[in-house]
Length: 181
Image 1 (cartoon, rainbow, N blue to C red):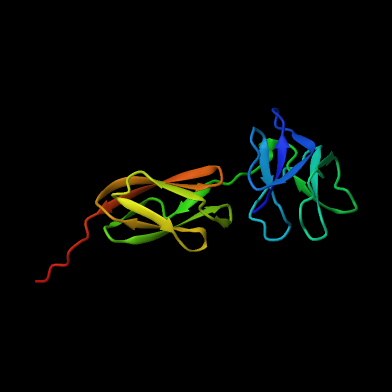
Image 2: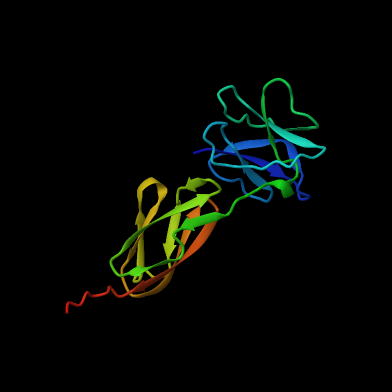
């Protein structure tokens, strides 16, 4: 899936004309993702209006136009322009959240974990288990993962979405036996 990015200089000011479309975040400092389309985008930006404002142009079909970033006081009257933060201090980047976190359960349990960022769920792009003798990870439905608790102990699972990651603590106990009286 393609993403759209704008670039900010070392002082946190947006660089006019720099809007690129790529499958991954460009290398180097200062790149911030903006909505690729006007419909159904999971990328959220919060704009704090200042004297200088930045705008990106979208096609009639709602897709970003690479290289269309402009800086001016007012929004252009013709075309499909959307405002993006002029100053990087004002870019809201919600945290990555794993649910559930932490995980505690008994040997044999399977627990589905999902990631979210802002209002949107995010597909887990990779995962690592510190101790596969305690918990294993398999791909689940709709970008989730399924954690299978396989042995008693504690471990950490690291989940990745793009270049962001989050750790989940996992504690596994013995399966309780039901005693009949």
